Image (cartoon, rainbow, N blue to C red; front, top):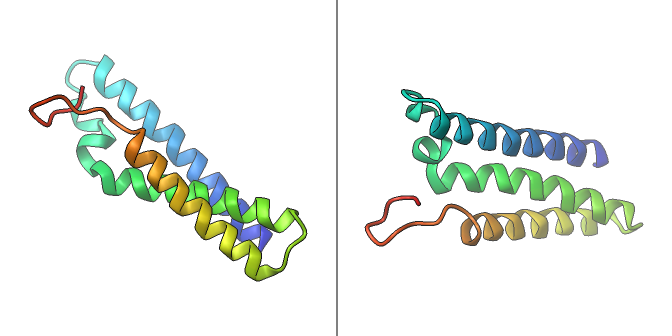
Length: 101
């Protein structure tokens, strides 16, 4: 199972890096606003990327702690839920009219 967690971690972290880079390009380069992942995928896309990274990190941490496979899966699910909540509540700020700041 550690291999599954490792792949999920790598894909999640790469997803976060790509998300940030595309967001920066969309705001810095004129005419590239369509690249903004927040505008394209919104909260659902952000949640998927965060869940993937959290699943891998939580599962790998629980697995290396010496627990059983069931404990590793529980840690992976807990990590995914925690990262989705972090992505939701520490994500993009919205101004009064609902637009992103």
